[in-house]
Image (tube, rainbow, N blue to C red; front, side, top):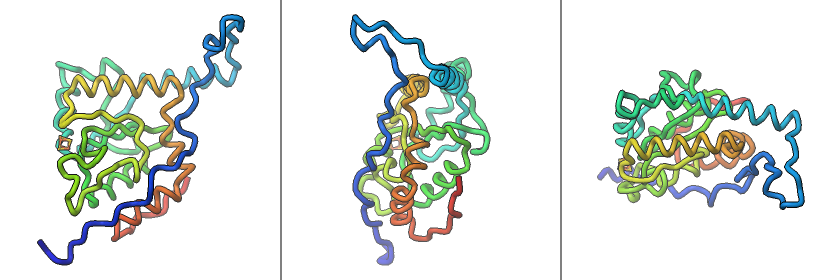
Amino acid sequence: MDDKIVKPEPPLGGPPQGSRPHAPVGDGCFLGEEMKPQAPSYKEALARIKNWFRANSLWVMAYGTGCGAIELRPLATARFDMERLGIAMRPTPRQSNVLIVSGYLAVKSLKRVIRSYEQMPSPKWIVALGSCTINGGMYWDSYNTINRLDLYLPVDVYINGCMPRPEALVAGFQELMRRIKKGEADGWRHYMENLDWYKENQKKIITDWDLPEYNW
Ligand code: SF4
């Protein structure tokens, strides 16, 4: 191995405890028998309607980052037919609101994934596939792959396995939809609120940093 290649230092601590987990928009029926359910305020009702529409119209950026991407193909074709669930593939980040990180990420790929994520319009969500995004999986001691995706980007749903089957992907998307409807999938907001923390981690591992500073 080239002597100049050095495994990047582990990043800073755990993710900050910001607004997550986000409290679901109030459901009065859990407050006790003596309390009658309250009608939601106009603002809450509007938020619920918006989230319902968002959850049923997911636009996925078709960008395979790791070997788990191979299971997205059966999901998109006749057998599993993701479009019947309101999920469609788009070719560019600017037209998408779901980023699937489909497995291991080399530091080089991480840089492109960050850039793609930052170009997507909010609200947006990240689905992480496979063990590699959770703890590095079989690449845990590789000199050039990251071990925990959530240190660099906010993950809304993990789908574990190596590699997760299309059925698991369908279940993962249904979980994402449930979380969006409940107002719990707020990784994009967490990213904005803790941008300095994420940027510090990203710059620590990407040594040839030349990405533009994203401006919301
Ligand atoms: S979890 Fe398994 S299938 Fe997924 S990227 Fe890692 S090695 Fe490949």
